[in-house]
Length: 265
Image (tube, rainbow, N blue to C red; front, top):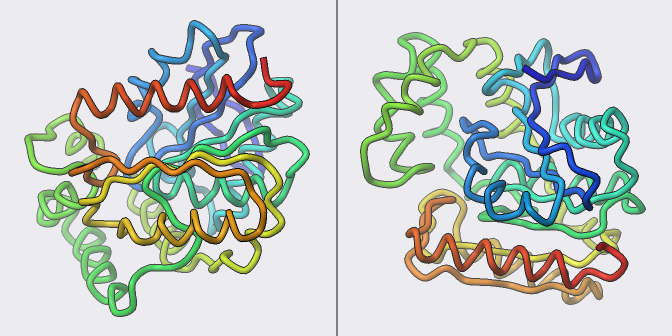
């Protein structure tokens, strides 16, 4: 199992290991690197693809409190560890939160941004109370009482035994630290003008977790500050959950975006 000791955390990652241009993908809250298996399969013949488990999830424990700025530094230091000078950085939901911060922290190292079902701002007003109830229930009783509700938000309808099994063995303190990071993040909307690389935004218009309008606003703001931005709407798309045909179309759009970047071949 490949791990890198970075910023006091033992980061689990997977790397297709080629000498091709690199893409680093960061997963959503309560997910892990495996959520990007379809994208790795689609990209690995033309690009080096790195996926990783963010603090608190999968094979990476959160040893102490952290923010998404710390997670952004994890990505930058993982690039250093793997000998990557610059790459395309992408993420879904919280993976997008930290990817935006990578582009703000080290703009010279980010060739392009892929932003899936994410936002630059904060949660909808009044939503924190419900999230805190979910957190407190998990901490006291484990995930089982709330896992169906959580799955409806981040996975969509269906049976999810593989994810429920992963949640059952999550370190509770790591989960709690990741949760506090999520709700305690800062609004970076006013800083979007410092992003200098092109961006691809993808959002399902039926997302129950991060409202579709958040990406509409993100697209508008990036265009206003002169960032070359493409916006793809996935009709009926949920939170990171698209129908198989739509998922294939999104993968094609991602490949087209990456191949269209100047001097990234």
